[in-house]
Amino acid sequence: MNFNKIYMSCPSYLQDILVSLQGLKLNSMRYNRIYKEKFQEYLERQKYDIENLNKFKKSQLSIALERASRTIYYSNLFKSMNANWQDFLEPEKFCKIPIITKDEIRNRIDEFRFRPHMRTDTVISTSGTTGKSLSIPISNNVEPDQWAVWWRYRSWHGINRNTWCGLFASTPIVPHNENHRFWRINYAGKEIRFSGYHISANNTKQYVYALNKFKPQWLHGNTSAISLLASNMLCQGLKLDYDLKWLTVGSENVQPWQSDTMKQAFGLKPVQHYGLAEAVANISECPNGNLHTDEDFSYVEYVKSDTGEFTIVGTPYTNEAITLLRYTTGDLVTLKDGNCQCGRLGRLVEKLDGRYTDYIVLPGGKKVATLASPFHSTPGLAEAQIYQDYTGALTVRYVPSIDWREENVKSVEAKLRERVGNSIEIKFEKVEHVERTTRGKIKLVISDFDESKLT
Image 1 (cartoon, rainbow, N blue to C red):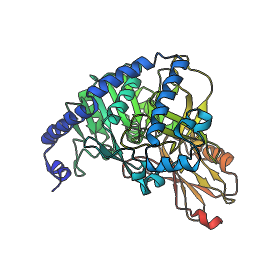
Image 2 (cartoon, one colour; image 1 turned 90 degrees about the horizontal axis):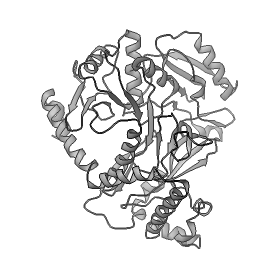
Image 3 (cartoon, helix red, strand yellow; image 1 turned 135 degrees about the vertical axis):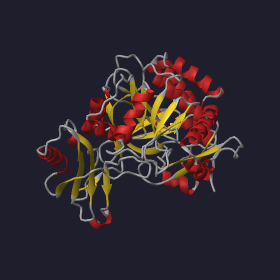
Image 4 (cartoon, one colour; image 1 turned 30 degrees about the horizontal axis):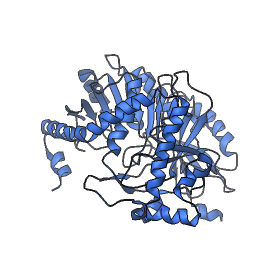
């Protein structure tokens, strides 16, 4: 019997103890000496002017390129380009290096190692919303560095590590057959860990009861889970009996209707950040509501895709177990011109638009992505998802919430038609909930359409 089966068979009070012991272990991995040093360095670098920031970026890129030159993959690549690693230090030269994908790394991962495996290395697995898993080795400085940049962002908003958090994460924490206590407590990490898999209309009162009992000042977690709870609260007229100070989300994009639902239920607009297990990019929202590229975390490029949007491509600075140059995340953004009045540097992102794979295909073969905009400013919408079936027809599955009016369907269809035209069938289907991934996240677009039929 593995640990998870043992854990799930324990009574809830014992699960609290086990969760807290795991919290102690995570604290030692995340908040060690490396974290303390990195956090102070991140705080110092936020004072940099653009000249010093660019010097830092160039120095870190130099380190990454030198490491890459000692790998089989990049050593062969540089030779094929009749170049050495120093030739790629300038942005206009660096972009000549081919972008790499998960599939390329997965099939030849050992070719990206520049040193032998060390005992302190660990392996992380990531699938994102594509469903394609990737396991890569990371050195022991990567995780503390990630937590350091995340806590810098949280410190901008006044959150510190002594703040108790109501956490809605993807990790299953409550047995499937639980019928009333849908949370466990991590005393070491100051977390009330709520299950994201038990949220339903019938269970909403228990969630609100726990929030009002423990009164965490900060809620954080998956957008899908928190917005679903918020929608259920609104439909049932349930409220918190205290004022929440912070509501932060990550792990997936925040759609406008989700943001509106959470603000109605909790009285706060959610603040978001973008990060990846691969540590190739990080984007943080400041108190002014602008998304800043964390330029001192990794070397980030915004590369225009064939659908017209910009894809996040990143080169990590810290991972010493493997070297990745110009790794495509598959995530799309809309960029924003100008500088933020908060004074922080970092290129601005208008919004996170989802994944490159979140597109539909028109009859002529054209791909249309960033399809969230037709749902903007639609009142009473709890969840939405677009499904393209094997014939190419679209079904918009939606979950109504409070203030929903059926005439909203016509408005959404008209806006959707502006993006996809009139040559494709669209129908609407009211559902109790939309399809989720195995980690409880919502993909905006689900497709069973075979593009090869068009060739």
